[in-house]
Image (cartoon, rainbow, N blue to C red):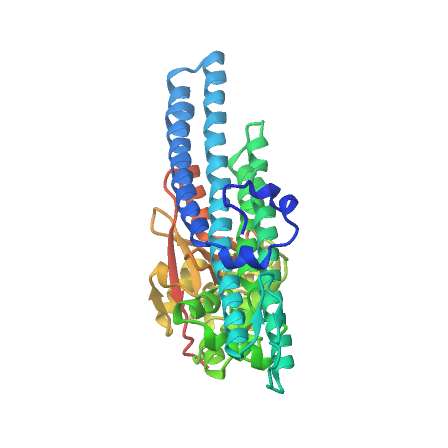
Length: 434
């Protein structure tokens, strides 16, 4: 593999294809170590931004209120913004490098397994990865095994090439925030960096991991691949690629049952539904905050959980009917029950009806993520749709509409923006109504 100090944005120009020898010699841990170093830098940038916003922008304006003071305050805020934007972008770098380390390790593992299969069958593998049958071999299946081993080796090297290209493209995109020259609002920063390039870095991390899965192989190859994984390696795919794993014919039934759950909520279909509609306005009700409404739809339409039709104490869409005229907004917004459409009520209802609170590091796809502000009020709800191998929770939400955005990225931005931030809460629902 190419030296990790080679600028990633140039790597595709250096080598169009990762070689067999490069992958054999690859050291994925170096990328994980680099990610740890970059994370320290991101935190330093965020701290600098917070201090500059508070002392340079806000405090300066209180003490120096004339035109010159306003100009100086704007200059301080721009410097603070540069640190904040850098912190955001660097967190995207961390996500990319962690994803690269995990995916490259998986590709290297797949290659090693292929080589072991070949040599274990008495075949020869040369320095380019070419598999041949030794002269004088009398195994009637030798040619067939050589062909299979050659394909497995090619597939691993091809995966590594695609992973390398994806990582290089992601890192190149994350350079762009350095070119921001104007003073921006927090909403503009979130839109142009956090919700764009940083979010794409999370998507790239998932894509790199999923690249190492034999999604298009036959069921036997998939079963052998799964059997070859350690418990920790299996967990990476259970958390990072639940829907793709479930859809593979060769994955054992007990693993698929674990992914779905056995409490009436089909978590795979819930996640599939949420990812399909995360970026669209489907299910949104005009005039209403739709984050919790989206979660309820994901559970109901995707996860196949029936309504609880016990009036205003239940979880449903139609108990209230319309208020007396005149009323403001869309008629549809008055049909949503409180537990269906309000984050605090939804959280409390799920816990009172079979759900359990889960520590944030133990979150897994299909859990529900809520945000509680400094006043103790739960004001937002979303669906956990993936967890990366390095522990980053990716969630899907409405208001605003996003698929697979990183929790740590969001928390650090909110803390810099407000000085307080939100506390994430995880609930694992176990619906106990019929």
